[in-house]
Image (cartoon, rainbow, N blue to C red; front, top):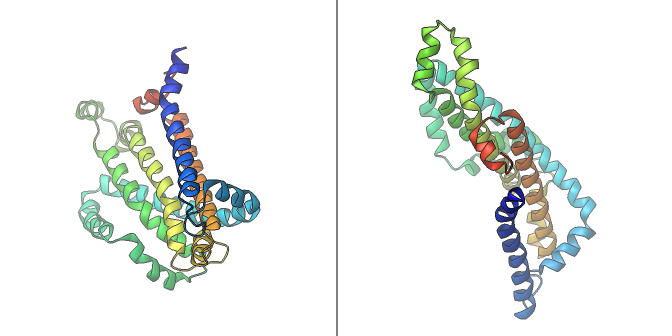
Length: 263
């Protein structure tokens, strides 16, 4: 009974808010007789989504591959750099100023440059942009997890003459995993956003960002909103996969047990 009450308390308010917002949107469009080319009603968007489902899935998958590629590249690079900066002081002093400087630049400013480097139609250019976006949260969170270890536990392992590799894999890495999964969840959301937005600066005609911009430019806003729905679905699915992997990888951590109604 307690588990059911916890589920209801947790999920009922956002469900009510979501469907309430959809209802108000539909009522506002119909009540104020807003033109469909300005703001289509949710019912019209849903009909367009169903009608063009196969095409939307196809272009959504094209952009999803770019997001996944950038996610893998950026997270891998962030983890590697984080291990280097946390292990060697020289690497930290050398790389961190560059990382901070690059992070202060609007990421989208890189899009035209990267498109010229790799080609506008090349999916690799979009992957690189996504990789730049997810690199910094991945690196910063991993560094924090590797360095913010309990001083007493670190001193205990050193008193037993533990090798640096043993300290890394038995203390620092387990401590870093919750930080890393927080970064993975941030990166999962940012990767799809970055892939779609990077396509606004040019890309393959099969890309989701190109589809949205072209449909909006021709005032086919129902199609554009249908494309946005696909992007939202993919982003939520990506985030959910990361959460599920987190529960399997670190079931012992309080952040996971706290989100588990049976914990």
